[in-house]
Length: 396
Image 1 (tube, rainbow, N blue to C red):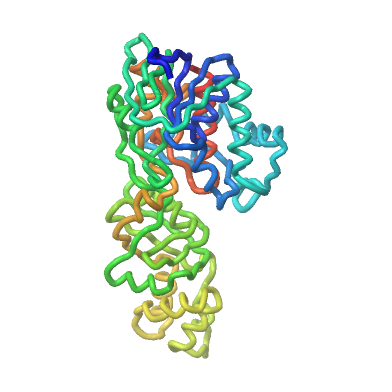
Image 2: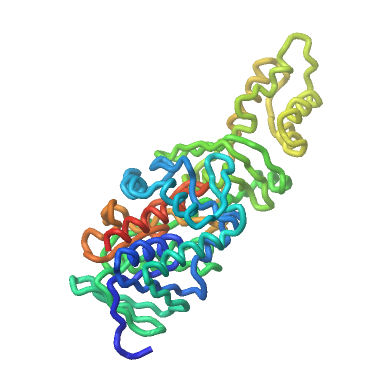
């Protein structure tokens, strides 16, 4: 590569979901786009998502499915590019897909088809993709454009889009460069934390890890101040604590010190049969009642831990209430290594909600997971990547 900087209209840092989408949209608008990626391939998180089939959107996506310090920020971008828009693109490329539970859409075959589609869209726009880009340093932002120096030379452009993702799954190449760049240009960053992540149990509750592999449909409720939420899906016991869709969803709201309430038998009166006249009451009856609605090993542990006094109707009612609001006290999360996404990120108060442009730095944009907008499990984070990428791609 020559010593002279290569000139483009737009430089995009990061060739994940949001970066690829932004590049394709900007390129097809006639912008000269350089898409810089530090990995040796694009879309690595797309390729592993959904068990390799990519849960690429959710039919029920709306602002209420996202967490942010500003719960209204995502509305504009999500309204500009909806799930139907991405489905139309997928259909245009003949990619076969299917709907699973709760509106989740997956490829019938490989997630690679989504990456290939996005690359084809980039090619239509003449996007130049550069891989294995390291040692990135950015200058500019004062009205004279941006200069990006890296291991493969220098690039200049009037617009810079930061699509570098968050801190989740560092083995896939995740770094904090997006937050570093935000701070470099004077933008605030909401403290990043693991989200959609398994929770750890310790102390007396560590006994639950003996049920590793057992799962049940439950309702999990979070009770942190201002962070109340509940999810009815599967919970999985692991050798370290709690996981499964219901717990992963709740983890995005959970903070250290918060309790989790678990309803082990949603909408079911578990012990009703023990309260009728002349019913046989005792530990064997209790275990049998629990086994009728729960896996055997889980029923056994709950029977041991119900801890109520006597077999009166009042005592049974106490046990019943506990089964529908069992309190867990997680000691932490499994961290960014096992988190599907990163919550927190570039403070949305510093960004334009319709364009993703920094309010104080013209020409600087942040999209995707780097921004303080985090979706629920089930395709919502991909829809945010597509929508925020399109918003910036139309604006650069």
